Length: 71
Image (cartoon, rainbow, N blue to C red; front, top):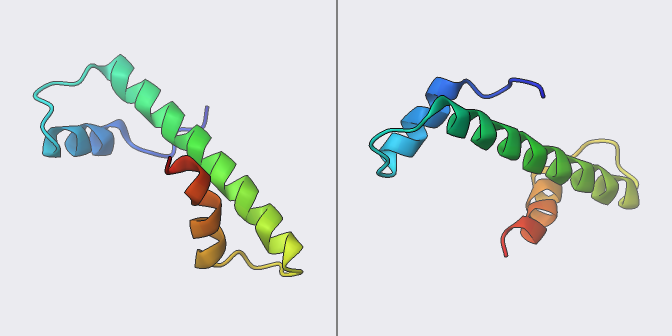
């Protein structure tokens, strides 16, 4: 899996919302899940963009694509 999110950033986020400690394995899994979700949202946004006969993905495409993940 591509390593796009530094583990330190995810650890800082977890601590900011109340975690005292987070294992490296948990951070790696969180990173993998976030990248999976981001990839799916991007794929959906591409389809929305194509349907609208555009080549540029807009903010609205991302918002619409992300709605299925906000259940």
